[in-house]
Length: 192
Image 1 (cartoon, rainbow, N blue to C red):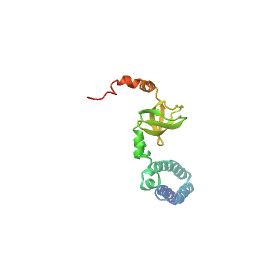
Image 2 (cartoon, rainbow, N blue to C red):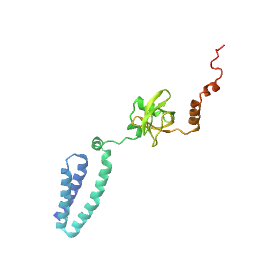
Image 3 (tube, one colour):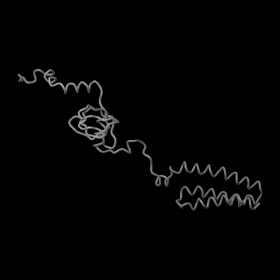
Image 4 (cartoon, rainbow, N blue to C red):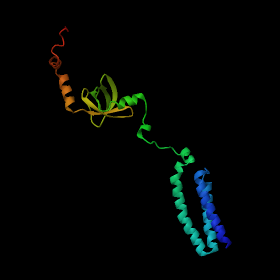
């Protein structure tokens, strides 16, 4: 009957070392002690009787994986787990730069402009009065071609050719030298 108590004591000690391994950085020493204690519990259980040894073995085969999976699941939420593991960002805004320049580029998404250089795929675009580095979204863009800003990536605008009616009208208007005179025929006359 004495073997039964030793078997249960070793099994309990092995499970204790297993739990302790998650909270005390031991370089694997506690894990090795846990494994040796559990194997010892099974061996001593079989010395007591075949049924006790089988019972200890089945208990170890069920309890150890459950405790390991529970420990792995809960460990990142413990104090030591939070100190050792890198915490994942909760939103994509946490990993993006928060400089004023980046926020300014983000505001340009959806704006229209003109390509100032041949973009195959990188080049320069002009939006308003400023020029920006840009990358074409998969197609070459000729200089002077209207563009539409699709997004921002690594401080460069992602653009594509603007084929909307507004862009075509602006392109036709800038190509017609009389368009300015037709739009405002009294622009040269002095104000009264």
